[in-house]
Amino acid sequence: MRSQIHLIRHGITVGNKNRLFYGSSDIELAPEGIEALKAQAAEGMYPYEENSDFYTSGMKRTEHTLELIYGEREHEIISEFREVNCGIYEMKSYAELKGNETFEAWLADSTGKTTPEGGESIVAFNERVQEGFRKLIGKHRLKELSVRHNGKPAVSTVVCHGGVICAILQECFPGKYDHFFKWMPDPGHGYTLTMEDGEITEYEKF
Image (spheres, rainbow, N blue to C red):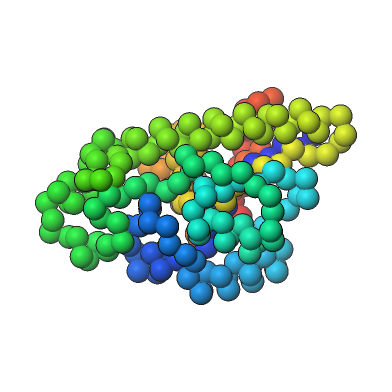
């Protein structure tokens, strides 16, 4: 039985275009993002399985991305898969914030424990994402049980955020990269994870 989890980053937003800190801001896809997703879907870039279960973070940009790629699909929301909350730095660029000592200290913190005012630390963000991933794995294992006798694959498709995908991959494949941001897929791209005997064994980028 094929058992896979597809993790897809939402399409391009104004936040991406302007290099803003905007994790918890519920912004829409940019027109360029919409067109890119439509084109990539038409080219057959995205993994597809009619029997898949679908999930999003519940944010507008992930809901719209799911619809553009797969059409209207019944899906569940895993709120733990929302992007990191940058607090008072939300919707601001590095150019606007550079020189601010508190901001510079947050960026330079290698422990991941510094928390921006009104936001969350990288450590807290990672803990939240891993809790969401445990929920997803539990649901996916139920999917495996439901299809084990009918020969169909067990597939879960998740549309979420770049930081969330990085945190998941860093946890699944520790030591592969020295920083989780090196796992970052481009907007509208992602990874397919293969599961065997209840464990994530390999990944493929798309």
